Image (cartoon, rainbow, N blue to C red; front, side):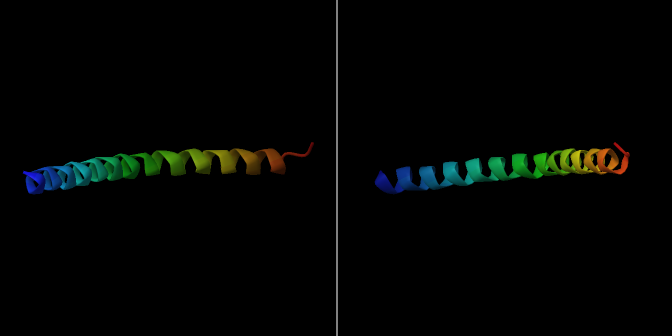
Length: 50
């Protein structure tokens, strides 16, 4: 019985890690795009003579 519980826990943990990993991978392009936008806007703001 304990072997089954251990196996179930391992499978559940693995599934959670896979889901988390895929969510992070899906979020990465959005994060990078946001950072690129911020950097671009900062560069434009710095280029404009104050």
